[in-house]
Length: 443
Image (cartoon, rainbow, N blue to C red; front, side, top):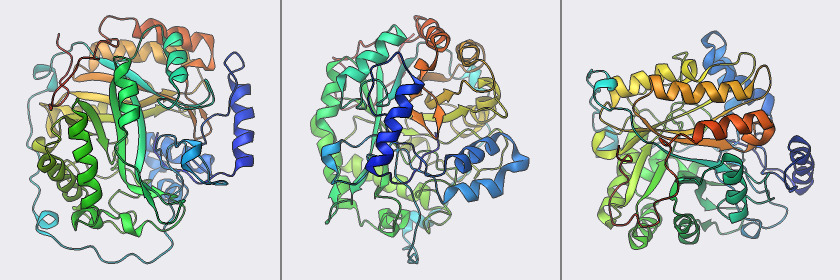
């Protein structure tokens, strides 16, 4: 979900483990991944506000200060006690004045507004889809892909092996001094590929912990080249790995909860695209053409987030588009109502030639039938979203919400029935090779 959170101590983690075990009594007991928010109520309200524009601006701003960025789990041995293991991201709350951004030619270059295009239904036909999940620690006590058992357990419940596995890291771990960069996750990528799946990696220019100063990770720092050596080393390792993978960089940028959004952390208008292009160019120079660039805003059915027109890096810098969206209670929102408005905007006008993937989605059990929502999601994908060629479920307890499919037998059964469709491809990609981007699965 939206992504941000604040640090939790070891006592809180222990309590979270108890709550996670109670929430899923039939599963192997272990401590769930850390919640993403210190204040889940405020952030929950912000997400709901996205669907109800009359409530939006004030609550979104309120939530931005406490949001926990959703990076993937960090192994316990990567942190020094009592540092937390973040669920998505620890909290972002800048505490220092932010220096003025550095003006560069890339930052100042005008960005052409996308021109209207034909309906995506005529440009991108429906077809087979990749599928997978971002899997939390509630199944085995450790998140995937660090624990293969977590992937095994989820696939057993889903009734099919995944073609994609989502996880995440930031640029650096600053719980230690000096900060320790997160290098290219070769081991984790090999684990995923060894299962026949494709890595789907969520990566952003920030550092742990996010509860303090993030001024060294502003978009202007990326544009000015202050992280070039790190990014180039990461890209070089990606090229040497030599297999195609998805890279979802600086996601949900149209919201206000992440420190890479324009208007947050001292970031200025126009810097998001300039930073994206700069990182992309470094990957190209390093020969890391096996990187599949995924541009992933948040769904915005109420039209009150930042306009996507000035946030799209351009077709030459994006391979797949993407959307994240969640069904909360009060009000519950169907998959169609949650995704269709922003889907139509992207596939009909901004990037009509690009395949799309759902980067994160989930539903709560509260306020209605989660199983019915899941069943409706799969039906809607067949009838109204032909450009969507991939689906990733957010299978984690987060934001104080019950997103995993295992929260009820009916929800598990509904997901299993939907994903059983031959349109959703299983783990047949162990031999996917070469320095090329991942294409949509062929019809």
